[in-house]
Amino acid sequence: MLSSLVNKYNIAGPRYTSYPTVPYWNPETFSSSAWKNSLIKSFKESNSDEGISLYLHLPFCESLCTFCGCNKRITKQHNVESPYINAVLKEWELYLESFDEKPIIKEMHLGGGTPTFFSPENLKRLINGIIKDAEIAENHEFSFEGHPNNTTREHLQSLYDLGFRRVSYGVQDYNETVQKAIHRIQSFENVKRATEEARAIGYTSVGHDIIFGLPFQTIEHVQETILKTKELLPDRLAFYSYAHVPWIKGNGQRGFNDDDLPSAKQKRQQYELGKKLLAEVGYAEVGMDHFALKTDSLYQSMQDGGLHRNFMGYTASKTQAMIGLGVSSISDSWYGFSQNVKKIEDYYGLLEKGEIPVYRGHILNEEDLVIRKHILNLMCQFKTSWRDGSWWFKEIPDVLIKLSEMEKDNLLHINSHGIEVTPLGRPFVRNICMAFDLLLQRKQPNAQLFSMTV
View 1 (cartoon, one colour):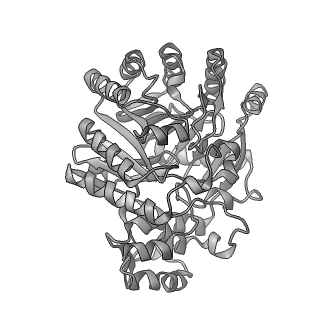
View 2: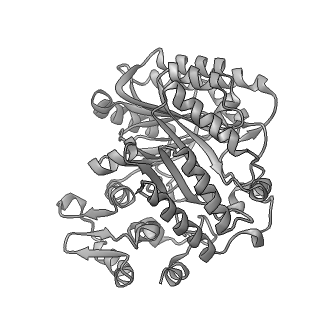
């Protein structure tokens, strides 16, 4: 049955880290000033109650991983570190000028690129520059992404001393053939060392990222990777499908041929086996493609109904305002989105002029806000409701018609005031969200914009 469902529903679709999704942002209503006003509004409403989140994009890598869809700059020249840090701190100063009180930082995440490309000393200078004019929330969560090959004990200790308690390592797959194809060579021993050192220092949550559907990857490779992962028992796992989008990322995802990729059926088999093995040692499925031990804050947040999803992925708590700093970073005020310019040279140039370096975004209207709530509920809680009249929108009958076939396939249950995704339907939650995506319904793309849903 699963195989037939995969064949039926494996279409291109968004991952819904936002609504509206980036291709449907409206440039006609967006401007830098409109974005800034939306952020100020959000900050005034929520800073004292819940604080803000920060995402810092650190784009440098010493080598190119061909599976990666992130914005990055490949270089072995580490003299790029200091100028970039200066620019990020300048951008932060521009935001601080807009606020009438000190921001309370509840969440901070360092992503990339490779954050551990930067030396421990430079990371310390960056974080100290961020927090010197802010307050740190008592229940804050600071996290960073580390490369197992270059994350040193000094990296871990320096960031721990600054309040970081969560680290995630990109593992992808332990098979050498797969690693060579994606140009990501790292041994189990390096992952083991980085994981154990983090725990010895005192990190309370260590995560691993594992990908299925990679070139030359077989179900046996996935099994081997999961079994090795069991030995280390990370607190949380991102176990997700490789997003093959070379039409967006260019040569960065062309280190292999399309024929080298597993089929949709094989990918689903890889996922189901991985999920089964993870469940056997106590991992619970959290949202879409994420797993956590029951002692981890991500699982506890799902149980408490506080799980949130934004451009950083799933988070254990919600803040209304999230500011992205650094080249290509995306910010979210709840009422609007903005994205920074993607080229480092353009980023530096705008900052030298004293301008917040955004180049595109979207200001949400009332319809957008309602749809966003429904999609967020589905992605985080696998259910949504319009029992509250403010959550009703006039296209709901049309949405339910689109979902009727999925109900027949036992992917969800529909009642008079809402829907709930079944366990069988969870792998297809992106498809379910697409029925609510009014912008996608009104204007289907002429070219493929998104990765496959399965």
